[in-house]
Image: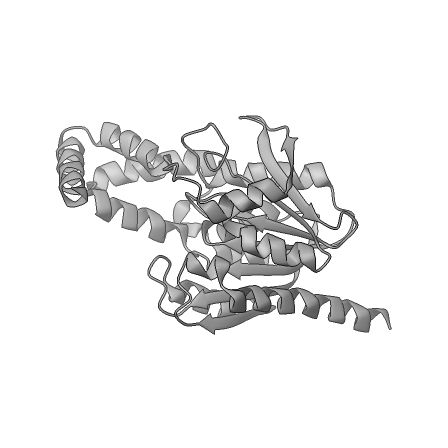
Length: 291
């Protein structure tokens, strides 16, 4: 059934691209921004049941945010990936809360409890910024992000006055154009229609898609350490993304994993242990600097 639907979708966009590239590009861009509201898993429900929920005022809709752990502990923000939700970071949140951290997460627009159906990188960036402005941390904090959430985090904090002591990427895209190219090929969008799609994206992002990279955004962050964890056999995001990030960002360390998967890694005990180790390493650095 999925193969049939994809074949029909490709036929539709090939024909529309031929007869009306502008219309095909506009429709494709709307499809690109649409998220699937996947059922919340049992383990994710456990997260929502154990945290304190609060709302953050935002232009599109108020954001659902969540807090757990020690209110006076070191702040760690959790940022989930595309078509996921804050609950997907539940095992990480629980472990960090038990170790005395103040853990805060949110459902990105069109994800989790959000009523929106479409979103994009810029809207998610603004949502994360709204959460950070709401919290207004006066000391450096840490971020643990997954997949698309790594792009959102670097984009949100690029050029920001806020300081990040440890930025932990649980996989990451890098070049935004690669994501658009893959989408073009999946739906069979024509070249002229694809250019219309890129023009629409660039009008929202206020940047050329070809020039927008996680690498550059992370370089413009005020961040002390970056730790990247990525399965070498990841079937969702290529390991090559993290390999480049690890080589190009001077404060980055790449930890190569195997057989933890793209989504399963969020519940993997070894991965969670590595996150805790990375967070503790920053504390040790601060103690040395204070001596």
